[in-house]
Structure formats: structure tokens, C-alpha cells
Length: 158
Image (cartoon, rainbow, N blue to C red):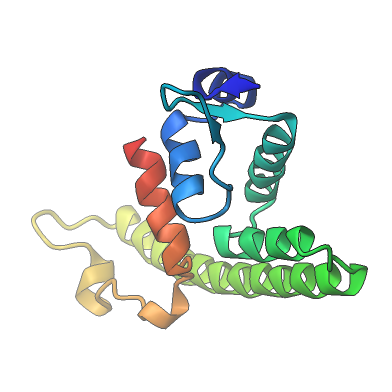
């Protein structure tokens, strides 16, 4: 049995992240000492390692939760995992497409800037802003799901 500091060091996780995972239900509440200190078992470490690995692969906390619920319920079929992972790959493909569109739009702006740099005019606003304000429709930009934004906020605070 390990205390939170030891788990944190072994897995390279901030203790606040462990508390957060417990609070949102990714981790069950661990056993506690008489003084109230959390005690983690080997199965807890394995679960935390799975969560870390899944996050590194780009799965959202909600997607990880779904996989863990399937695993906890002993209903983890290959088809269910396949379906969820396929959905994630499709989401990644959509994001890549949106980013490629954004990149193409930005390259056009770079080209305009480059042409303007060969014939600079002092004191004037950049030609890009004169011809087309730099406004990219919000639907063109990839947005992480709300729970990912919350995790980003949590990770930057902890």
C-alpha cells in the first residue's frame, strides 16, 4: 500500500490530479489509514497508469471513463472497445481536416504579407488587415470537449 506522495512520484502525476480523478469518478475512493491518509493498492496504480497512457494517446477523460466503466462491469468486449476507438480516430481525422483548412487560410495570409514586405509602405496597417480582417469562423476551429477544457484548466492549476 502506497500513500499519495509515493504514487505521485512513481507515476509522475501531481497529487492534485489524483484527487481530481477521484472527485470525477475515474478513480474509486482509496482505502484510508486511521489518520485519514489515502492508501493506494497495486490495482490503483495500474488504473492510474492506464488513465495516463490513454490520455497520452489523446482520449478524453469521458472516453477513458467509458472504457473504465466497461472494464469495471466486466463487459469489455473487443467490439465495444473497437467502436469507441474508431469514433476517436474519426474525431481526430475531423480535427486534422479542420487544422489543414486553417493552415491553408493562414498560408494565404502569409503570402499576402510576403508580397507586401517586398513593397513596404510605412505607417499603414498590414495589407492582410486592409483587405480581409483576420477573422476565422468559429466552426472552422477545433474545440476540445468541455471536459477537456476543464481538465486543461485543472492541469494548469495543479
